View 1 (tube, one colour):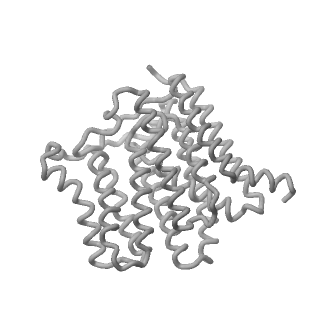
View 2 (view 1 turned 90 degrees about the horizontal axis):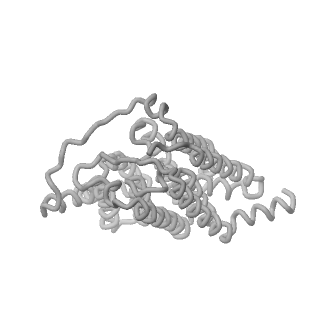
View 3 (view 1 turned 135 degrees about the horizontal axis):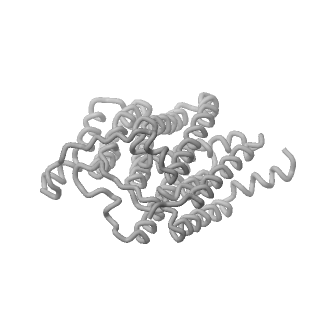
Length: 332
């Protein structure tokens, strides 16, 4: 690498650039709102409480709350990396990249929905899961991690898809034992137990299973930028994740467990987004967070081998999707 390339790489990975990208993401979201480029996304997969998209009637407040939740998700990602040395770097570029990818999908970033709740709760559960790696007295944290999953199920029953993922995570953390499984089960059912035991919500209804043909989503032009952003995330996650896995094999057991679980979570989320095509917007926040970890890891591994080219190209591609979304006409 030339001296200019080294300098450019350092600038990208600096905290100053991370702050600039985060502020740019917020500005981009405000611009999308100001120009009316945020299509409405309605949640309907609930068995207890009203869907998150109905919590805030004012679109402006909904957008601001969602920005704060996404920022909190990025903060948890940074804390996970610092506490568990996940990416073996102190650079917070991956979190700034996450913010940028979110801003380039105004349909998800510009309003408060279950997607943001999924990202924040799952990242919190990941932190708790990592904290009990090969630890005997870990029942309370396992209980709390699955409590977060159970809490999410009350507003979006698709959270249930992540139970097998975290059960597998117990094995990766070397704590797959009967008591741990029992703590996970109790943690998952406790939110519902509390809610319906105290009569805080009406009796659960049978979940609505709704399938939208892919052709119907593709026929609506305002959905195209969202679908393009998901496709880009899936492609980037697949190729960069595969590259990272080849390098992770040489790490110690703990690092392999942590990065292996992030890879498992990424793959599962990608599969859910494809299979549950009707609800694809729900997975965007978590998918972008998982891919951001993969991008951060790739950038760290290739920092002196022109890794900035791939990272910059992905950022430019997302900016193109944002421009596309801003030029798309949203029905009133």
